[in-house]
Image (cartoon, rainbow over all chains, first blue to last red; front, side, top):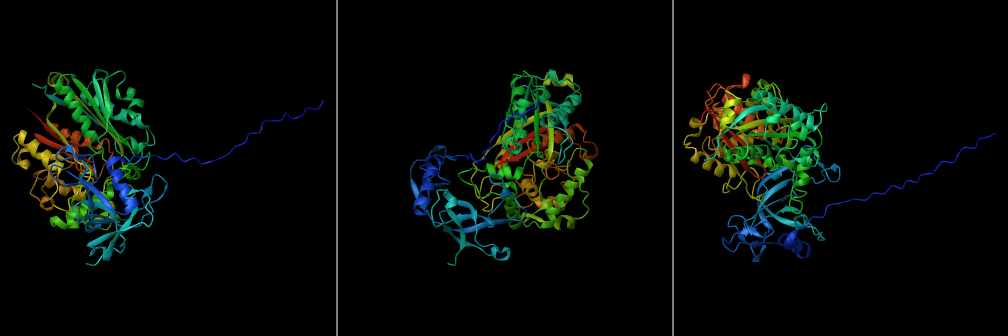
Length: 160
Length: 389
């Protein structure tokens, strides 16, 4: 008697990648900054009705005065002065993509001409030349991506 | 009138880069066991627990629910708290407030972090306000690099002063059985020759990622006197938080910004009758992620005048044998299990008050000690401990 091998079930495996990304809400106030940056390459923020200081980033409440900030919107200059900077030397990893941190540009604290402080990248990468970088202006990405300050590529040194 | 509160039990693990031999809850159990042994009591007699950990660093959601047994917390009241770098001091504040209120007579306070699990700097970078700072941050290191540059430019301090702070820390760490980095550094050149992480911050200018836990048992006056002959009294606790968006997270390049350290210190010193900090307080354990930040914090906690932090270092005032020792344990730059780090500051200050710090006990007789915590953009918690109230 011959025994035939019992046919085994064939499993078919289909691999596919399905990214499950986060979706963060920008909110009413930051949302306006995002939209102006994307559509018009402009930086805007709101002003506190009590102390009249610019609130940055735009928010619903003035932290110091503890009052509702309201809708007194102001367009800001995209020029500013570098007051502090640093650059990455050790290899940092981007936890969201598992890749080496891609951005090679130095990070700077920039005082915009309206008086608020912004942390962003500088175009200048030479450590020696960085020492003398003072006045800078935003270089916007060609197409607005709806990434708020991420729609700015970096700040470029300007002569005035 | 609030109940008086004392620390009656102190316990910590040995701190290391890697603790592959234990899981999170087993590591926490080591500290809890040590605190209970120090208090000569059983954890079953502790009424409530409060615990601190950064969940995103280990990627374990609600770690406290995994370790109810190890914490002695099974079917007991308590909760976990996260306030960033200050968490380990915030839970101490909670334990203190609950016991002071009379609601509990005893409380267990635990801070822990097991950083061999993930990548902390990546986690900090990832958790920066997603719609605002993403893609720009370089973890905590980038912020402390800018702080270092600010301090260098404004105060007149030189790199050798930062290196002297690092030498002081290593000297303490080498005498502290629990500390993580014991480098045996001999000269400032060893520090000045270490490579840059984020310019101008060098490898030896910044704290490590450690695994470790620290536990403290708090008790009301009546219970404390029954539990131990050496209670360390909690004279005061203050915490202060600040808005996250400012010119510099830790340094202030403009010289015009408000510091939560200044405001917290002023308030605490005023209500405790402290007019000359280095005279009225005997030593301090402060949360200094970098040597540059340590000098900066001397100024913001009013140990000295503005721009003179580095002069305290130059004169050796904050050395273990100095007039006002700071971080004889080796500090954060030697040992940084983040959730436990502020708890360790309080534990080490308490050991100094008891006179039980062993080889790193300071020369000055410590009747009053200060422990501080730092996190977020200059968030501050300050704890004042005394031998007698």
